[in-house]
Image 1 (cartoon, rainbow, N blue to C red):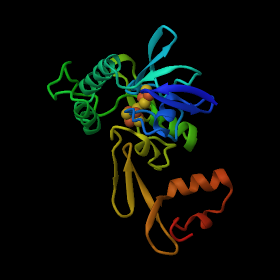
Image 2: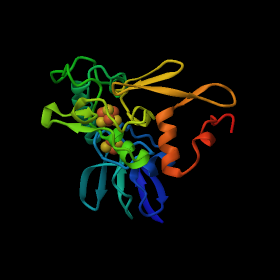
Image 3: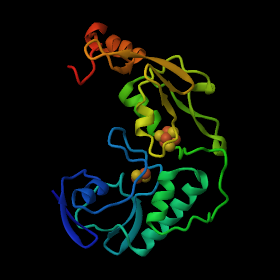
Length: 237
Ligand code: SF4
Ligand code: FES
């Protein structure tokens, strides 16, 4: 076990635990956007910054990627941290002025809605955190989406912004997206995402539409479970 202090509270945690998890386990809240429990960390949003003091040295780190160390003193809300967090949020607000999640976080720490930086009009709600790409690669195993273009023009989507032939319509990308950038529209028997419309499968028992047919075919192919056995929704299993 490693012993350290967060916001004046003595804490012990297993070696390798990130400061973010150690803080949360002790009811100390740190705001986050890109740290989703289902995907590996990217440290992209920088919202989870904290100050770590080791001896006489103090530095600002991202708490979702910084493991606890013996004897460190962590501050999650001191003046220096709040100044950095405010700046990060102002930049995120300028990139994604339509994101309700970002505006709400900004309001919570007392940032007025008047933008400090000139807002972009063409980025939607995407903060380029890559969580959607990671879940598609790491969990689903499909890699249907990625970044295209560079620098300020970087966007997320299927290659060449064309309909993806490999997307199975599972919606995992929309689920992990912290800002609501990914649009997924559903009717009773269809789901529309990334420009493609997927036909939904009806549960053989209750008759409810529950998953895209392409997703079930993909799972069947990957796992060897016959498609017939996958045609029952989780409620009826
Ligand atoms: S679409 Fe969402 S999850 Fe994907 S990079 Fe943008 S903000 Fe992150
Ligand atoms: S939550 Fe840590 S960098 Fe985004």
